[in-house]
Length: 211
Image (tube, rainbow, N blue to C red):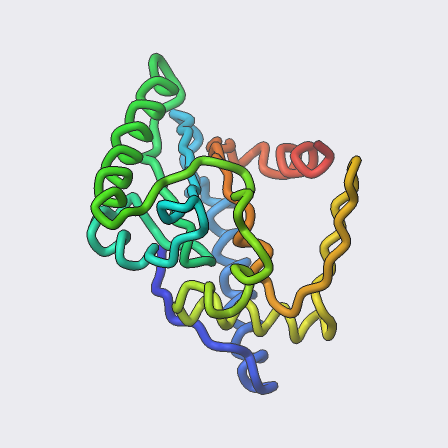
């Protein structure tokens, strides 16, 4: 999928090079569509599972990097915070028992992670937002120490020219301001992937946005 070499666009020359690469990518996409380079069948599905790590007191752990190295499996990858990890499942043909196969692989990989986490007194929690996350866990010290996350944070803050505002409406409303993107680390989910026929790209994108 590429190399994790990132840097912030800090000069006009950097931005010109970036735009040039972007336009080249768009031309390549147009050419692939025109020449039928995208597979149309069979249709595949896939999924990714994000999860939280906690210590024995159910508070966010800080050892995602340690666990990731010991798991040593390309299905696993880091996330924004040091208390999250992600599993990427293998793509499967959309046929027969594909959903059962997807579920079984997820269970196997989760058990692998759970067994290794237990050696480090760490628990794996599948939840949307970990209830024990506090403002303390949303600071830069809890950001995964990879350059791409810092570059992403700095770029978004520069674009907004202001703090990030979070407004959740409901029975109890939450309205918060924060100086970095770490609120994104609160959210973990199971995400399903569906391969789309290139002839349907536009319509599928539009109805997905409408939903």
